[in-house]
Length: 587
Image (tube, rainbow, N blue to C red; front, side, top):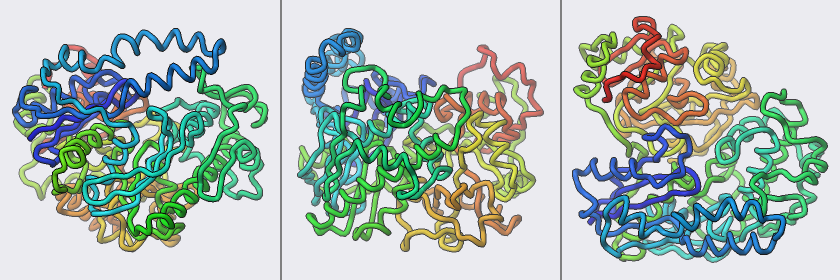
């Protein structure tokens, strides 16, 4: 039985394919269109999923869609009517896309896919989030928390999952939303909404992380009513996202003591303190919700999804600050992950199949054989060398990293979700104190304050990090920030953030043997079996998908070498004028 899950029209459109309950393929549309956070119907991602199994749309038994469009449309109409006439302009701008495509999903499925069956299930948005984290988790029962901007009406939901059933018992509704609060402050700090919230998270340790001393913590807390159980309500006098196409209001700007930061304006201590205040408030609210959830469910396991579940700074504190013993988080927790949620909900909860699958890795995207990679390189007259053996590859690349070269690492199936996990990664030396600056300025083209993540083999993690024991599986997906043990901070400065922490990725040999062995091989040379791992892309672009994407990214940046399959491409050996040409032979 094949079930196709689809998410689209808001941000991070994606598709996922289940075969007899197992996720066999999943990808975001942005990876194919090269348009970051692409919202459009994920036709390319769907074609990839079908091609991966050599099937056609006629072989799809059911389709799960990640929300109920009519219920969401009801909320859109309600909020605009309630705020009329202030909302008129936004209402007029929103209606064409709603009337032409967003509520006409069945027509789109027939027109773009040729899907003629009526077997389409529309799953409520937060239920899709809940399914994406519980039904593929290793737990037979668990408490569930989903937190994002907004679905149809819901912004936060929680409940319990047992076997193949999910019961969301409580919810907080729009316009009160932690996710939209975080996005509003993200916009206030001059970053892009639904794209740069993680930058605010990375900026927060530069601010005053003390609730008594941070004046902006007190100011923001004054406009949020938080109950003992974690339920909350925003004072909407300070927010305009319910009727405007922008977020910070003038009243909020006045409260925070200044206008919205311009993109080219320098970050001041005030901005950093605001980021810190936002992070602390987010943590305060969710900790209260989780403690209440534990008391009401008596569960030892917790699973999370929704965009706020990508807040890795907070995730690393959950087990220490609640009574939960084990945790699992969907690696693609934002809207992209709901295509998996919709598909597994149909298979397990609606069709009542017994759970038989656990998502143990995120390698669900396209893969390119050495034959295909070689064909691409040869057709485009790209200079390269071929490794004679696996041993030579490991020894050569670990030595290049040890010598402070920056490596583009293109191996196996592309990762699912926003984190590079060792298939489409940029790797470099964490022991070089200048490497963070080199990567930010010459490779990633991004802000100087942004930290880089360490990757370590799971069997070495306890030596270097103050992590939860046993080490939770979400570290496999780079979803937890932990303190680096003090004795190592000066030895691995380029992955040590200003507060002494690192966003940890762990890897086990059975998940990705080549990646695991490369880390170990680097450890033989350096004495430190840790690498910098950052996503293989530059600012403003999605993570690379194809050999062409990887090559163009290397040639347009300061990446020194590209390891693509069994081939090594050196940037200096190839004429730079080729990299931006439109005359490439497609791979």
